[in-house]
Length: 376
Image (tube, rainbow, N blue to C red; front, side, top):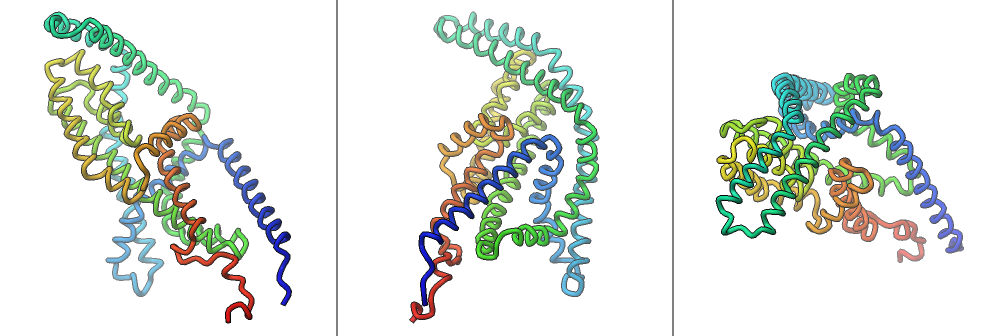
């Protein structure tokens, strides 16, 4: 039997790859153009990763699992998502009002806080002047001044972006209204959506698309669940600890710590800066206990949760995570900082997959197309 022309086959492969790359670039460009309207749906996808394990758990224990599996899953999704949104609404009603109040008070007090913090440090300098070199005192003053300016700029930037986002408020409100429905149907029909997406591609590469989706689902799912669990734990522990110590703006500072925990490696160290400024200006005698609180929380999450994130989800060296954070920050700002490491982990796993599909039990195209006389 006559073999196909190798040159034509290679040219066809190059054409296919070029077409897929072009389509991917166009899709990414369109997503970039409508990125403001996609936030509720990105949030919905994140919530499905968080809620799906609970849905599977309740689906298994519902008696209708064997007789009416679709009804069992629908009931499980309704129970889990309904409970989640009710708990979320209750938490928001309790937490959001004091957070907004503390945010406005903190923005108004930042100049005074910086002045008071510098006064505290200067009093320490006078007390321990014989033991602290002049260069170190100058650096401490400069750090406090720069840190305060950065903090004030960050809060003003957040307020400014919030006001700017009001222009797109209608789109955002509509998106948030449909968010529960989006989460429900995405949990209910995620397999149907996946199959429909796979069917878009030619039959000869559908098996690769399936395995790529599995890799992405495993890495992103594990990372999202672990990071949001970590952020919630840190928020709760820091807020409770600071409130117990009587530190001002405890809930807001705990929320800042929780949000910064979404940034791998460096987030924890960035989160403590505003707390140090607030404590030095309001309750300097508590600074040691506050540092012990942050250190204890970081040791807890660093020894238990973070290794699990890196070993199960990321499988990246810390140096590569730092590179991904810097590159992601340059490309997409805050979103790039948060999403850079998992994207880098996905790219790494995909390169490994396409270099050696055998480890996933996938045959290459050359192995699948074998002439009958060559199998003997």
